[in-house]
Length: 46
Image (tube, rainbow, N blue to C red; front, side):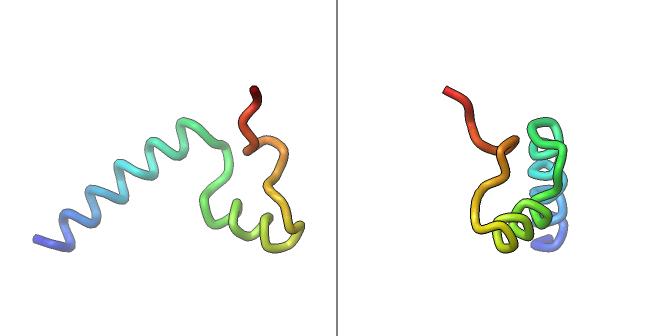
């Protein structure tokens, strides 16, 4: 039951993430680690 709940949570999170961003979460973390800053297209505009 716990595994099914985790799977459902991951599916919901990934669908929300992909509607908002073009890149995957791991790629975001990778780019922050390499360049030392948040990529321009992830920053919120005012």
